[in-house]
Amino acid sequence: MARSAADKVSGTEGLESLDTYIQNTLSALYPPFEATAATVLWQLFSVAERLHGGDGLRCLTDFLIPAKRALQHLQQEACARYTGLIFVHEGWPLCVREKVVVQLTSLHGVRLRPGDFYLQVTSGRKRSARLVLKCLSQLGRGSEEVTVPEAMYGCVFTGEFLEWLNGERTSVPLQNCLLTSGSAVFRTPWSSVTDPIFLPTFRAVPPPCSCPGPEWPPPQSPSTALAPASAVANTRPREATPPSSTAALPHCQRHPGSDQTSLQHSPGRAGCEGPRSPCGSSNGGLVGVGPSELGPREGPSRSLERHRQKGQPPVPHCL
Image (cartoon, rainbow, N blue to C red; front, side, top):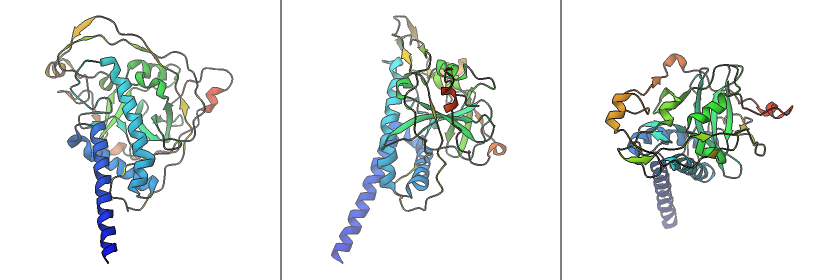
């Protein structure tokens, strides 16, 4: 009996430690946590249920820890262009106040429109994680995804990134990013996400990011969708999302900064002059996704490997 009681105490302490680690990790990635907690914790629970059988510890080691490294790298690269500036929204670019920009799970219940896309961190090989962009498939049913290589993380949150993706598209170009807050999904112009707001200060004007011709990395393995996990670990799993083939983007090179200085607008002034982020004083171009747009789960991603044949530039088509 004494041993059984001790085991129960040890198990309780383990769950508490797991909960603490998860909350500390997510609060560091998605501040302010009081605004984003409901969204990212639900997404993590979903990952644990569907992909890890409700096992919080397994979800932590196989998904959250690798995802943390990938998201930290993405944030560091995106913010490197703004060294010395103070962001109004400290979670940028992973989140903007309560709205999550880089999702932890697939947005299964959302019907994607032509031109819509969203960013997601998903599991990779051998306890690794990768960033993917998901958009409507060419057939208009389900979604396709494009893997973003780490070498291009510094260019993701720029206008050039989307321009490159749209370079050889023959249909509706990608233009609206989907953000989430709780169960709500918001559609917003990409420029509202890539143009952060700073506290007033002088700074060096950040250089543009050029995305040169594609350089294909080694083929990617099929991806698996993810969904959130926390210390509540014994819920029954749901069916996993079917694997999808992915295409990688080219290497991105950044230019050195210039010596020009400019005074940044204060948050209030930025809001008066027009939307510069999804959570400014105006609505920033945000459009809530209505109930009529909530559709069936996204279908499996289509293979983009055909672009690697015939010697033509392998530009990913995400329509």
